Length: 420
Ligand code: HAM
Figure 1 (cartoon, rainbow, N blue to C red):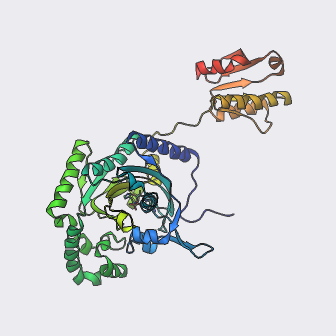
Figure 2 (cartoon, protein in one colour):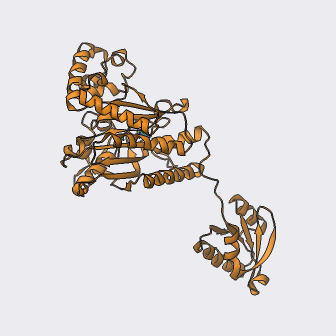
Figure 3 (cartoon, rainbow, N blue to C red):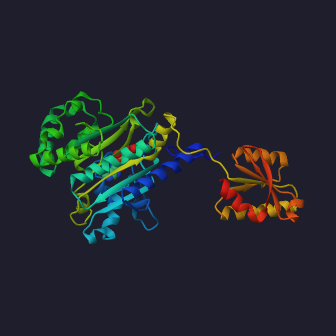
C-alpha cells in the first residue's frame, strides 16, 4: 500500500469541515479589517528564502525542501509566506501608490522538521501582512487580529507574548553584549551554536537543542539594550494594545527564529498540554528591512502567520463546537427507471435553485435509500412515484416530524423556500 509521506496528513471528515470553517472565519475577519487576498507560488527561487528568511536560521539551513528543475534552476518549496508576499509586492510594484498595503494569504508551507503534535513537514498557514507603515498602531492591529480570530473560534487559554528587538543600533549593541557573554561558554553549547556564534549569535537563542541550557537561559536580554527611540516605540505598541483591550505579557525570551525581524515580535501561545512544544498558534513581528533587502524600496512592514493544523488540533482537544454536522436540504428517493430519470432532473433543479440535494446512485432498495437520507441528515425527502409524476405531483416528507404531503411540482421551490 502506498502511504502518505512522513510529516504530511490528509484532511478528512469533521476535521475537513472545521478546516473550511476556520478558513471562512479568517476570510470574514480579513474583510472586516480590510485585507486583500494574495496567492503566491508554492515554490520560489531558493535565493528568496536565503536572503529573506536568513542564511543562519534553522528554517533555511536545515529545513527547506530544495530542488532543481529540468533547466537547473535552484528552487525551494516555501517554508513560510512572508518572503513570497514581499517578493510579489516588489515585483508587482504595489508600493507605487505610496499607500498602505494590507494582504492576507492561506497556503501550504514546507519544512523538514521532526514530525510531532502540531509540527508537520507540510502544514498550512494563514497570515496577514501590512506594508507601508511603521506606525505602532499597525503592530497593535496585527497582534489583535489572530487574538480576535481565535476568540471567534472559541479558543480560550491564550497568552500573547510580546518583545522588542529594537532598531539596528539597539540590536548591534545587544549583539556585542551577547557575543562577549557567550564566548567563554561556547564549549557548553552544541556544534550548531558554535557555527551560529560566528555568523549570527542571536540565532543561538532559538536553538532547539540548547533551549533549556542554563547558559542560554541566563544570557542578556535584548529588551535591556533598547535605545530610547526603540523603547518609546515599544511602549506605544503596548499602550495601543491596551486601547484595543488585548491582554499581553512582555516576554524577553521571544526572539523568533527568522532573521527579518526588528522592533516588535510576538507569539500567541495556547496553554494546553497536548500541544507540547507546538503550542505556539501564531507568531509574527515587524520587518522594516525586508523589502529593501529583497531589492525593493525602503518600506516598513508588520505581519503574522498562524499554523492552521495547530488551531484545528486545539479545536479538537478543547472539543469546541465549530462546523455543523453535514446536512442536506433534500434527498430524493425512487424505485423504477422513469422515476430515477426524474430524480436526476429534480436533484439538479434543486441544486441550481440553491438547495443542497442528493439521490442514490447505487440503485439501492427504497429501505436503504431512507437509511442513506438519514446518514446525510436530510431535512426533506421527496419520494417519487410514477403515478404522482403523471399528475405533476410529488410526495414531500419532513424528515424530522415525519409529516407527509403532496405538493405540485411547480410549487416545490416555493414550498421549500418557505420552510428551509
Ligand atoms: P513562524 O513562527 O515560523 O513565522 O510560523 C508561524 C506559525 O506557523 C507558527 O506559530 C506555527 O503555528 C506554524 N508552524 C510553523 N512551523 C510549523 C510546522 N512545522 N508544523 C505546523 N505548524 C507550523 C512565520 O512563518 C512568519 N512568516 C510569520 C510572519 C508573518 N512574520 C511576519 N509576517
